[in-house]
Image (cartoon, rainbow, N blue to C red; front, side):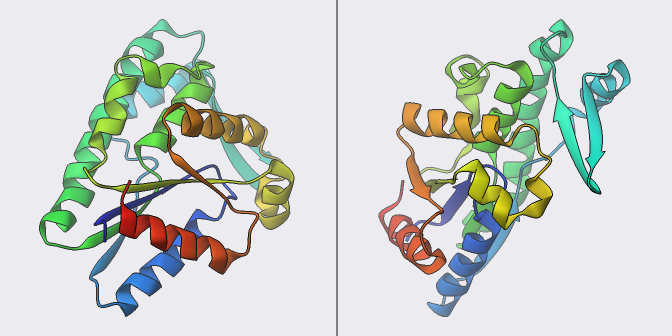
Length: 213
């Protein structure tokens, strides 16, 4: 069975539920399992993100009591030039700290969000769905451990919002779903519909984890 299982996808597609079930099933088979969540491992990128907030390129909105954060970095040459590289190094540091030590100890890692999700965030922020085709975008996926099982969970926006009321006011949900689908197709990743029953989807993910990427 693969040691690194990576669940990716937009908010509301069921990653946390599937991660929990995977961990329960793997642990029941006697495996030592660790859960890791790596969407925002900000470190070197913090000064640039502070600059973005100061210049108004990132902001938060509160609607219906729910806070959403947004990035729009299209107008900043500084962010376009430097932020993808700093986020890449942040992802590398996170992988060396949170992922690889667990694998070296022989543990199975179930990871929610990681470099593919970071690429989607950047693609939305720069309005650049092809960011994964150029440097440093091409290097993000190199951080995924060899032999990993990677699944992109997909769902229509209406159903995602019905399952997660906090997504009702998320203005970028459709765009993120679209880019996840595009990357899944472009990179020949395994895309699973979360519209099916929860335990049927979990059975498919368990089978994927046995087969590897």
